[in-house]
Structures are given as C-alpha cells and as structure tokens.
Length: 123
Image (cartoon, rainbow, N blue to C red):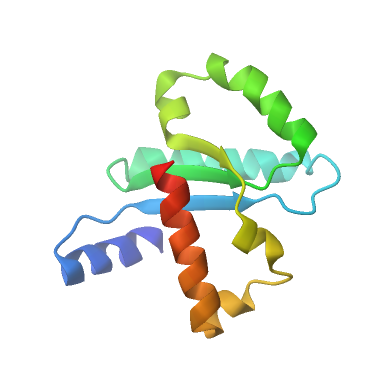
C-alpha cells in the first residue's frame, strides 16, 4: 500500500515522495518478541529491495535512555548506508499521546506532529 500512496502523492504534487517509517518505542519496558523484530526487519528489507527509490528514512522514536545509550555504542558499526537512513530521536508530541486517534481527527495535534517529524528529519 505504501507505494500506492507514494505514487499517488508524487503524481498529485509533482514532487517525488518517499515513504518514511517511524517506530515509536514509548512505554516499552522489555525487549520485544523476537518474532516482531524479525518481521519488522524482513519487511523493511523486502520494501527496500522492491521499491529502492521510495524507501526513505526510518526513525526509531522515544527509546528509553538505556537502549538509546546501547544504540549509540553500536550505531558506528552499522554500514554507512544504514547509518544515513536510520535515525534515533525523541518525539515529544508523539510521546505525549495516549493513542494515535488525535493525529487523524485533531487538526492542531496533526499539525504539531507533522512539524515535529519535519524537524526530526532535518536534525
């Protein structure tokens, strides 16, 4: 479905649109089920293989302090191509939401979230 949305927006706006993946880790207290991690990794690899020009940045948002420190130690070991596309950031607007519904039905929340994502991408 991602490529359908991306193609549609690219045609409508006359600008090339990429797909941004953002994973919010707020509230995670334990290591995720390995099957989830494997599925996430495999789907990302498949997407990059099938639609390389559409695959944009992947953001991992709101990691707990300990995990963020751990990632900081190992990120330099990732291939350069992965380092360039993978961002670990804090997203206060997203972290403050108890559920994602306000992103779709509250124009103020949606605007704040979009502004936050743009800021995180530029950082």
